[in-house]
Length: 389
Image 1: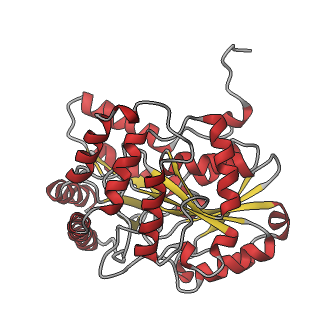
Image 2: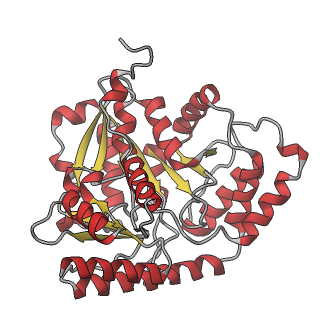
């Protein structure tokens, strides 16, 4: 047996999907090929200047150089409480109902660590963010996939969940605006989820990564604004996409005080908290002016419309999403998700994400990220058209 043989839990999950994409991109670039990547949802625009300035000031302050508290700075927690009141009309107790996390991905993974035992079940959307399934598996639990149904506005049919799975279910992941489909929450779905969670005693985790990235006048709600939501769930709010801070790893978990207490207890044993200068930068983000975000959403709207029109011109018809930074499109006839992604990478040097990366229900689709300059997006779609027509 090798000295460094991975655990059985690690062996049962594939490498993280973007790990292979990044390797392929690097390989082609090293060969001198001009690759246009529309695969990974990483904003191409810089973090807003006022946030960077706040960070620079905080880094220069020696008081931020020591261990932070896992509870977070008081001003960080209060800034989130004020933001949720102002933005969503949700009352958050800054003392007990919010703490910082080192990005949303870490939080989702560690929620599995805090609340799932071997043999438990986590309910996860399909297609969905891979951590919703990888996190439970790495803690000895099982992920029960809930197909997102187009006829239900890309919501799952909660009544169709097998009774055996429901009996073991301890947690359920939901995410709107939705990655990868771009769908917004269907009317009445959050209320349905609250009633479902009460009936079956399931902790709801709403991954709120895209509420600030919306279009056409749509304003995304918080799950916590739903009556009774704080009794059954938590919400993870990330600054990554709305504020162009993917590399900063700044987020917070808000909602049910008992759940947050358990998450905090776990965190005190696995890391030393979020660097305080990052927390202060997060405060600046939440308290900053609305204009930069509005300008950014106008940019994404323009790119979205460009991609939707260009895809339509080559026979790939999609509905323009009202949220997220993604276009979810059907693959052309004769292709699987993977074969289409392979074809455009090899023949057009364009990276898209095959829908099957996000779960079985993603088969037959591909995802385009709007995170490249307009001219590069135009060129990417033109390359795809030239090789598919």
